[in-house]
Structures are given as C-alpha cells and as structure tokens.
Image (cartoon, rainbow over all chains, first blue to last red):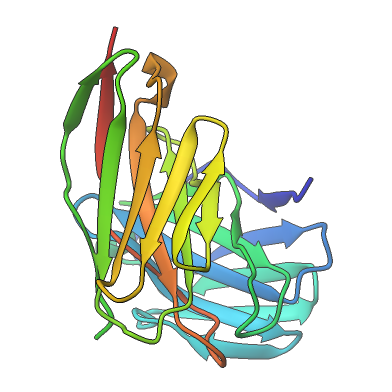
Length: 115
Length: 112
C-alpha cells in the first residue's frame, strides 16, 4: 500500500511566523504535490516536484516555497504566515512520469490555523 | 484555463438506489480521469480511474467516459449510508502534464 504521511494533523501558528509542513512517501514515487483545500474553492495546486531538487509552480504559489532534497520528502514552507493561509493542506504523490496513467495518492492532511 | 465542473449538490438518494454523479471538463486533450471520495475532515481517496471511452466497473462503482462530449460520470449501485461523502472528479491532460485539475465536488447523502 502506498503511504503518504504528513508531519502534523493540526497546527496553530501566529501571523508572521515561518511555517514548515513536511510530507513523506514510502513508495519511491517520482512526483509529489502540495494542495490547499478551502470550502467553495476546492483543491488548488500550490507547487509540485517531478524529481529531487526539481519544482514547478502550481496555480497558487504566492506566499509559499518548497524544498525537495530527498526523493521521499517534500516540504512546503510559508515564509511569513498570514491569516489567509489558514486552510487544509494536502500532500500527494504519484509514480509514473508525465503522460503516463498514474494516480495521485493523498496524505491525511494538515489543518493549519494562522492567528 | 482548464475547468472541471461538477454539480455541488447535495445529492440525496435513498439507501439501495443508484447514485449518479456527473462531471464535465473543458480541456479537449485530457486523457486521464479520476474519481476520488472524500469524507468530512479526511483526505481524498481514489475510487476509480478511467482512460478510454466507455464504461469501467469495479464492484458497486461504474465510471463512464465520453471524450467527444467531454463528460465523465460515476454510478454507485445499491447506495449505502457509508457512501455519504463528497465525490471529486479530477482530470489530467496528456503527455507532458503532471497536474490534476479537480472539480469542486458533489456532496452525496444516502438516506437510510
């Protein structure tokens, strides 16, 4: 079974703090993704990575950065947290490179509240 | 802008009935289609994937794809209260694409 884990289920931070969200997958997947999910807006892609040290912006990268130093680990960084970044953050991974019939598997999510 | 449209619901069906969930997409070159189920407060879990026109069955679930009409659907037979969840349609374009575009989901409620 594919397993994607996220470092925290719930996180409370203060405005202006630097926040790290960690994601680890144990299935040697090439691709990893960070989404946020908000009521009425659905799932929106923040960043993704198709290889170690490679990253691409998604639809809403502003205010975020990412790091992928090892294949199994993909970190999302909020440089200076703001209240509008309060959301559910979901990490996903997939195996097959672009164009293949791959499937994304999701971690349990981190509910981040920024006060 | 690639778009995936779903009726937000809620869709209410009685226990034992067939639930029909629909999704349309705007990008004609889309090649891979997925249905995810998401329980309240949980992360999405994959139910079905479909890549070719026609029907694909897996237990009580059937996915249907019509690329000419840019339409994909999910049928749930013998609906159970445990099927009550939000169902997300996701679409991926062809070669060179890594990203999934998600619909906003349809909330299904199965009434005992």
